[in-house]
Length: 159
Image (cartoon, rainbow, N blue to C red; front, side, top):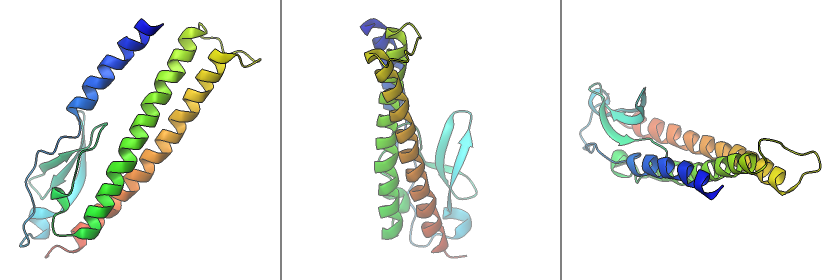
């Protein structure tokens, strides 16, 4: 069973390493709404925080979120909300991934049978499912913080 979990863990570690990098430019105090407004853009490659009508990628929004203070430079409330997003999103990711590993590990150990008498493997499977649900809820809470951060930042831009 440990070999199976290792096969699951390696691709997840690679995704964590490649996601959430800060790659964009900063906003200046003289930004207008058209050049500096932020939004979340979705593509087949994933989500990203983009700036302006040119949609310059400011920060990736992958499985792991990095520091986004530069993206919200000049607006302390937005920076605090973005930090709340980062903390919640990363915690939710850890909980969801750990829950998924426990869920599938429990299923593999029990050959896919969840017993009514709740043996150890069944408890691990159900615990993993519960952890995944909690992680998803924590991540959604983070998404709300990011939405508010973007709104607060955009409403202060010159029109």
